[in-house]
Image (tube, rainbow, N blue to C red):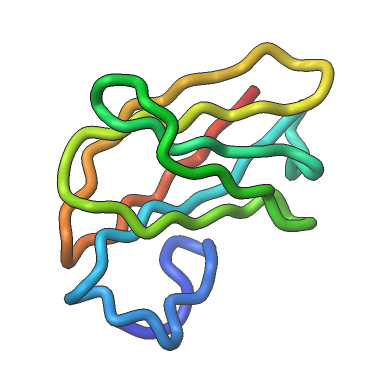
Length: 98
């Protein structure tokens, strides 16, 4: 798979067959949220990773198979949790609105 998916981040150079990709955009008040942080929590709620959003509000994780929670932190907004299921060979596209 090449290029962006659903207008999101480019997958050029990513071997989707070998990765479980979780990516998306964070919106606050209808605009891309930056600065913002997205945390990847495992199925038990344990912290696994955190990434800042880009200037366009985008983020990406490479995760293992299974259930995950994305916890989004944006200044002056309540944290938002979103549960997802990742699987190697698939791209999970997420839009998170705070």
